[in-house]
Image 1 (cartoon, rainbow, N blue to C red):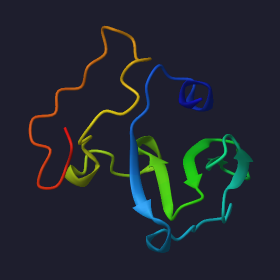
Image 2 (cartoon, rainbow, N blue to C red):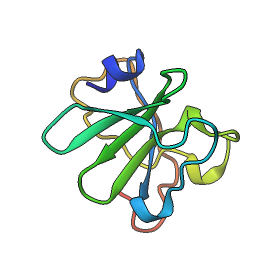
Image 3 (cartoon, rainbow, N blue to C red):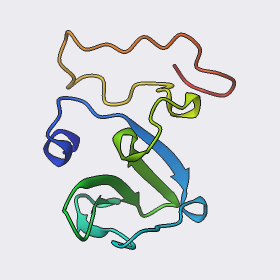
Length: 103
């Protein structure tokens, strides 16, 4: 589903607690499409760009590319999920996952 949502072979997300996310700008809160039993895909309501996923539990996962400063250290990937369907040649080396992270 992530590949179809983004058009990319892989995707980098950053997760936030729902209460820590405020939708600003002319589009306001994103448009949502129910993609599974536990999550919806989020799109800009004006241009249709992919923004991330809004889960039923209090997690909002935003695509790293939606940030104005994607080079920020707190956006560096800390672990892989869904590794099995990735292209065999694709591997992100996690040098320092930090405390409490699961490399």
